[in-house]
Image 1 (tube, helix red, strand yellow):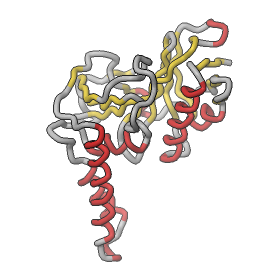
Image 2 (cartoon, rainbow, N blue to C red):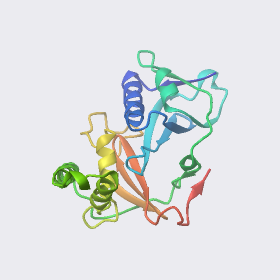
Image 3 (cartoon, one colour):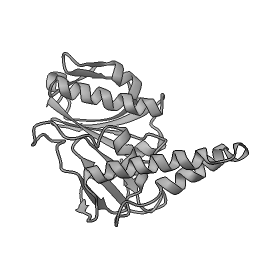
Image 4 (tube, rainbow, N blue to C red):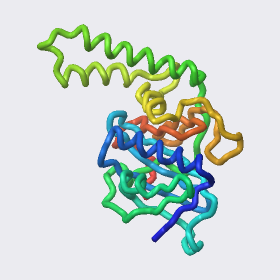
Length: 231
């Protein structure tokens, strides 16, 4: 049995909240865990947004008994959520599951370069709100016979595939960050491993929206692009 000791109760609560949001979009969600030392990276893919969500979790110490050096496993999001003990700031890693295809293709570990043109957080939140309002307005204007799933999906793709400002980041990535709680104002002590300023970075075919609470990664050139990291 592998037991992870999280940095504190707040870290445990944030981890649980992230898993709960993933499960809201996919009750059968799986997450890939990668850890080394006192840093745990949690990868998930909410299907509604077609993005990869990454949450960094701070650990107080690597593992129970200190027997393992690294951890890399795909598990059920629901099972690991149930195993979190917030008061003790611990989580028991459940048995591995057969990972979905996305879990085998992750963004590269390094080589990230800053990208210009990203609006401020307030601007990003306003952009998402405007997109949601537009989607509701356009779908409500449809005649009943045209309000089909195909037409709703077409309108959604048109809106959420737009790019943010002068960047190549699709608006759906910002919507995902907002929906997963990554765009809320930072309140922790600056300097924690997952405390990074809001930024847009790129590496190979990947774009990554970094926030103090997590990251959203998207492929710029589709699934057939080169320069991926298969692990």
